[in-house]
Length: 333
Image 1 (tube, rainbow, N blue to C red):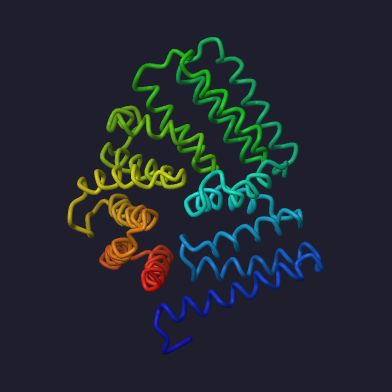
Image 2: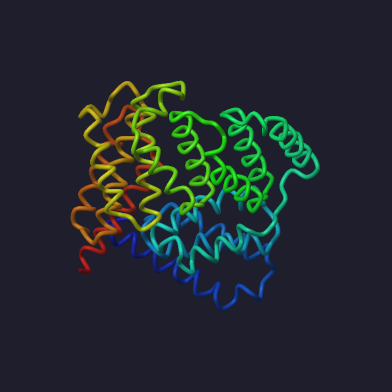
């Protein structure tokens, strides 16, 4: 692959991965589930390293790996963590109600217990604590219920996680929370749902919290500016996953005005947020058909990482791959 342009290398890797997908369609059912899972894992590593998040082929390879891992019945923790991320990304490319996302959610809904009896004992202990706090309500009860939900998800019980968070969201007006606590709850519950790939449930919570910038940060220890900007980027990412690219663009443009021009800002968290904000802005432009502008934003995000004191190679590669894919799409327009 030496001597080739970035676009030529991308197209060559695309051809190789399409060949894998075709072979998997034809022969995947004839080999053992574990053999298929290993082959899909190798393809996934190549796809993650060489393809763009906006390329439908990457979603296809990720989905094949999830299905193969599920059929093999191994790697329950890997599958749990893989699914939350892949559902979010597939929702950006195809929409949250697309057939691709529905297939992934069908796998996610299946029980794949993790941690055995020990995990169940932890869940029961936290459930007992929530029962004790139920009558008094307030933030301690809300936190205990969120802890229960996270334990359920960690134990591979996604349906229980979804029901626990869902019931808490439905009942939160009766918990006696102050206005600031309501916003904090919306931010934390929205982030937990987003992490699990429940982007449709997460969206109204994150948008609610984002409309009141700064107030939840007063309740959360840490830097208010970072919290406010992180919430804005998280909300925009959720909007992108729900097909609301214009709304996401508005949020991201507002957030971008809060950053300085110094990519070597001593606050490394803000540096990371800045290049991610620019990258997501490029995604919003791409999804609205402004491919040339998207290319410029993706390149800007690459430049911001390259200027930092300790560039993140994996993130830079992901941004570069997306820029190359956008260039290929722009060339074909």
